[in-house]
Image 1 (tube, rainbow, N blue to C red):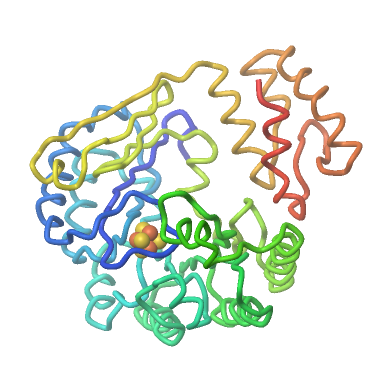
Image 2: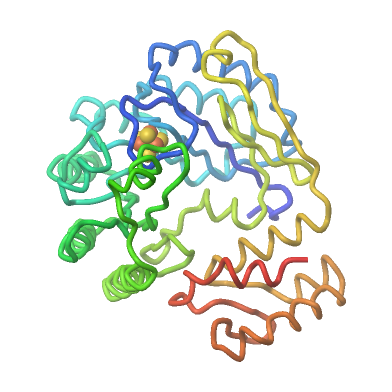
Length: 376
Ligand code: SF4
């Protein structure tokens, strides 16, 4: 087992989507014809930047997007192989591919099973076809179920699915059905996100025009509570605001990210973190394909690190470790946090066990207000 200081993770950003979902504000493009040139660029970027993570052992590799399942499994494996030539990958336990259910044909899954990818994260979002159409997703509920079954037959035993709740304009049964189907599929991991309305998305426009009415705060809380209670009753651990896992199946890649492990992000729009700085690729997919790979970066101060620790810790079941704060940032900081936490402890929004402060999982929805009040 390596110490946290010698670990790192690798992320590949595949910014292509065949269709744009109503709510999405991630960096993505529809020009899939650029994909081969972008993949060639990613190999070059890997070589060019491999010293960004100095003497680190990789513990996980993640293909995120966009839609990484638009990549042929050969291309996925060639990027993994390339990483193996540059880094010590003997500690890599998890290689995740985000996938859209309708990309996972028999042929695709068969080819994928021959690669080193050992975890799939499926963007299912809902098992209600009407909601899927509203979201402009490419798949329907039947295809999503068939994709999970196909992966099982191919031997995949670590599957995560994404679900979105908090959607206005649909009846209560819709969320019930979606959660019930998710539980019946018996996947190892579920990410459940509340729908957010972002400026610049189709949903943002629909909201401004009055074509979409967001749900009330009470309904948000009720949906959140329903999702949490149902998944916990089905045996899932609620270990992070939006994440539920069967025992032993917490997402290793994301968990590393939340605990401050360094990472290298490759591809247009990808972010990297070296402990001292954070940098992100500002090239468009077209520029990237033309080998114009540009970055912006920011240096992190001890205060930034502390605030980041407070934020990521309070979004996880483990919460803040006051001993760690004392060790890393000094007793005065730990005391400041304790003093600011007093009010939340009285309200029952925070709880304290020994030297740990955490939000009960049922209060995770309130995490933003608590986090802000504990910032340095
Ligand atoms: S597939 Fe994913 S990245 Fe692409 S538009 Fe939909 S939500 Fe966004």
